[in-house]
Each structure stands twice: as structure tokens, then as C-alpha cells.
Image 1: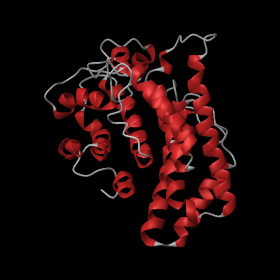
Image 2: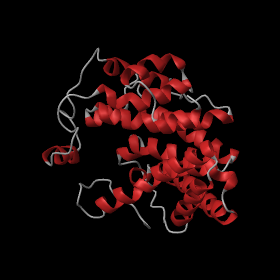
Image 3: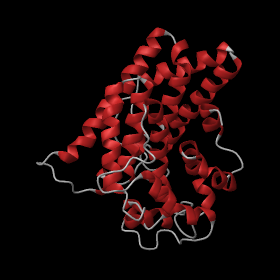
Length: 296
């Protein structure tokens, strides 16, 4: 598709259903890339090449990070197969990823324009965390140290804007939902994993406020262990949360399910092994893509 759009819409509205179906390609191509690396069977490489070529020649980035967050699967597939892709596919995918990185940097910096005061939480909440994730993964995939330096700057700024001194995040204050705490921290930990080979320790990187990612992951831990519980969305400030609850979308009423933080804590365990026991409590093994990608 030239454009994906699910943000702010319910199933069967607009192009929601088509976007969900189409975005399944990203997991498929990532799985094919893993299969290629494990077996050496060229059929899988050909599949990755075909999918990457189709998407890189068709998709037009919107720079809506919620609509585009699942492109992380495409980026991971590219990294796994990069050296063996046909030259045309490799060049086209690199161009798309550079467009992502440059565009998300430009969009992030709009909030610093004195002529455009910030009026939306989307510059500091999970939206910005997903922007940082996408630009970091893209910068790492094209192996551009300059872009990674920009990612480091924006990651630090997001920690300052989003994480409070007690470790809670902006999304919890706004949505009163641990679902959105996880949705905010997963992209930041994924970005931190991608930045580590470039010498960055984003888990412990301290913003000028004194906050860091480690404190946010620690804040959530008592809920993830089950020592504390939380009724979701009771005091949310976002009308769309109630709309989804009224529509019967799962997860928008009732108690938060700790196992939904399994991927977050498996990712965190790559940054600090102390989280491995909690990760295993939430899920006996990491997601296949994370295990294969990192050698867990």
C-alpha cells in the first residue's frame, strides 16, 4: 500500500482493515529473513527481496509514528538480508529508510520551532517514543553515525520530556493505563538495543532532568510482578479510549494483564540481565524474532 492508517480509527473504519492486513507483510518478511540466515535456502532470500522491493517502490511515508511503527519488522528483515539482496532492492530500501530517518528527525524538531508552540502531547508521549524508535532503527540499518548522533539527541530529549523523576511516564498520567506505559517503553528499549553497537548506553543515559529509561522500567516492575494491580483507563483524558471500550475492543476495560509486558522485559533483559527473571516469569521464552535477532 502507498499509505497505512490505523491510528485513531476502529476496525472497519476507513482503511483500518486493509492496513492491518497489509502490515502483516513486515512480520512475514522478517521471518523469511531469519529462515534465510538459519537455513541458507535461497527461496527465503528471494521472498525477502521481493517483499522489500514491493514496499520500497510503493510506500509513501506519512510520518505518523503510530501508523508506521510496525515498519520495525521491515527494517529488521532488511538488516538480516542486507548483504545478499539484489543491488536494486538494497538501494531502494536504503533510500526508504533514509527518508524515514530524515523525516522523523525533521518532524521531531518541529516542536523546537518557537513559532510553533507545542499544543499536543503527541510530541512527548508514546508517539515520540515511536518516532525515536523508527529513526534509530533506520539509522542503524543504513549504518550512518551522523543519523545515530541525531537519534541520541532526540532520545535524550524524549526521556526528559516523557519520564518523570519517580519513573512514571507521561502516558500514564494522560491515559491512566499501564497498556500505554508498555506501549511507550517498548519502542524506547528497542531503540536502545539498536543504539548499543554504536557505543550508546540508553538504558542509563540521564536526561538533564535526572530521569532515565531504567527508572521507567523499574517503576512498572511491581505491576509486572503482580505485587500491584491497576484498573485500566478509569481516569483517562482521551475520548478515543472510551470509544474503543464502548466498541468492545479488548483491553480497554478491566485489570491490566502483566503478561502483556513480556516483550518489554525481554528487551530490557538485553540491556540489563537483572530483568531476565521477570521476563521469564511473564513468558518462558522471548518472542522468536527477538531470540533469533540477539542470540538469546
